Image 1 (cartoon, rainbow, N blue to C red):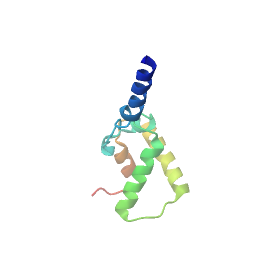
Image 2: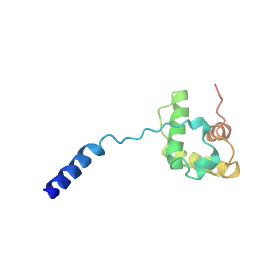
Image 3: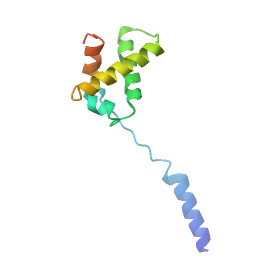
Image 4: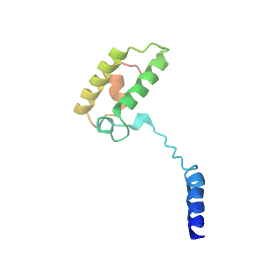
Length: 102
């Protein structure tokens, strides 16, 4: 009887206990600093670089992805951020790639 109760409880926990566990995290990219970017403190810097590329290319209406240029620009941003850790990464991107703010 105990074994049946244990199996039932475990089955219920597995079936229902974990199904509703979904963490939703939002992030204001404009507040990410270069230190957080290069230090993997938010996420992999590649993820942030992809978001930045999409954001700025979307603002320009550009739908073309230059994968080699993206890789080079990511390295430039990383190097800039290593030298300027307190700079917000969006400001670094705008300064480094001469992007005009709206």
